[in-house]
Length: 104
Image (spheres, rainbow, N blue to C red):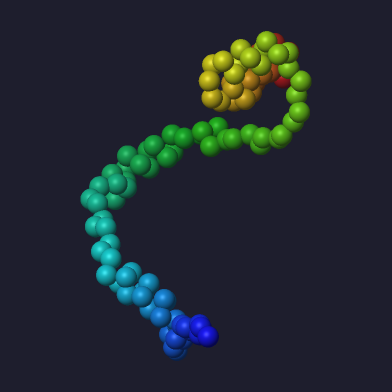
């Protein structure tokens, strides 16, 4: 008969947990690099204040089923990855031009 070896559980956890904690203690932390925000707070503040809401704006995306002509879809796909983004940009450009023309 084979007997299963049970992991020994102590007050602080299993032997596996102890090994993991010991390995974590032995790892060195990466040194903090000089530079970044602390050395140039004025430049960062100026750059932050120069930003507009539109810099952060990302319209909501909604999944839709859209029927396109096969040749139109092939043309967008032929340009490589990101064809859906290119279709969206093209439609947005047309929408913005129509809004300018109508005075919306």
